[in-house]
Image (cartoon, rainbow, N blue to C red; front, side, top):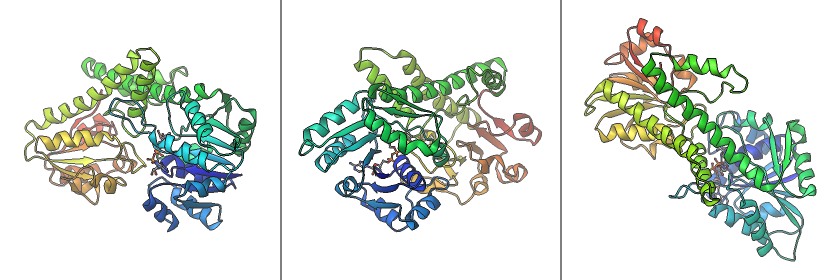
Length: 429
Ligand code: NAD
């Protein structure tokens, strides 16, 4: 099928590459000319495992192309995906200006029936607005349908997730549009549900809010476990074996971050408020998340006391492993607090340092994790990369000025760390 993807970021580029891999003809559009130039030059502007190779193969097979022109993309396709950013506004609601701009431009270039699919995460009733916009700006009353097809991929395993989704949600009142998308997704052999547009939009916000709730629950539990002398890992393991609960997203840590959970939870609170419901449960989820980062910082302070002129090694900057994404990474908040108290920071991340450099300026970036540890008063772990789990702890101990590890991701065993002679602090254990 002929597919256009507008917005060539973590979602758009992965979706485009995967659909090309399945044999579709894909044209990716982005208004960031620099991104388009990079992609045309055979490189990818983001890190996602396997993506570079997949884009290369699709280019060689001439199944994917890149342009900054929506007109060109729309003309070359039957299905048009909108996968642009929907960042938060200062009041917590979603900024839909990019979606609105794209909808208008798509409408102005419609030259026949097309399915316009919203993949960006948007508040309920956005589909209605997109349809109204297209009606207003289309020419010659060309036919179209609007579908909500929320995306559930996770950065770091985005290609796997695209090929093996737990479910595909198609929100539309048009059986014609539904069957076109069913055909597009048929090779994935995944559970697919067709809903109305509003329900599909709510499924996305509800899912992310629920996952964030699980994380905040685990973080609240960690506080109780610490006070009780229990081990949160054992508690969540015991809970997670219950199939009704499940073991995923029950990891205590430094709080959730990234480009989705913080903005989607606050957008959902705002959506509910506009609909007349005070979603107090989610307000508490947000508060627990903020308090968790503060609490972790207080652990560092309690360990090192006065931070001025003390060197702190940081392992992990990205908001999660296997990505270079720094958007709303907990590391930003924690390192900023350390810098305000005049600590010196030596940091290492396997993939996110390039992106971190424009956000966290006054810190030393190290070429490997051992260098970040060398001469530091303590080592702070903020992202659970496998590379850190597999480190030579004896070597680490020798390099640190004091053998102190403050682990925000519970990657080491407390008993083993004690045996090796470390002062070791983690979360809820
Ligand atoms: P991103 O910032 O990586 O990519 C968005 C792209 O859209 C950028 O390349 C940007 O240049 C482009 N863009 C913005 N305005 C445009 C316009 N007017 N015309 C053309 N291109 C434009 O964002 P992302 O992480 O891919 O997220 C996209 C959407 O998908 C968001 O709504 C997000 O909430 C949702 N989502 C993201 C994830 C994730 O893990 N990143 C997962 C599920 C859903």
